[in-house]
Length: 74
Image 1 (spheres, rainbow, N blue to C red):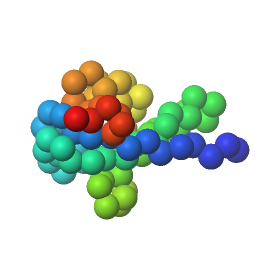
Image 2 (image 1 turned 180 degrees about the vertical axis):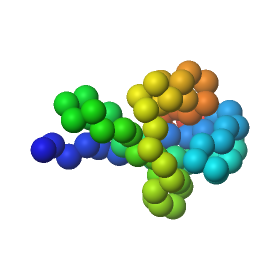
Image 3 (image 1 turned 180 degrees about the horizontal axis):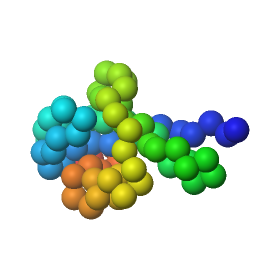
């Protein structure tokens, strides 16, 4: 089974996920999707502690205005 990478993102719009409120400029980490095994994506906070699992639909929604790739951050 291949190892899934974990990507770093910067929050650009406040949202709540897994009973945690994320504010602008917070950092989160999201494990990439596993289409073969249909496993959910895992979300980690800025301290790299596990927060919750999300579906790929939730991830795509976050990418549409809530989080950006850390390298794209201002």
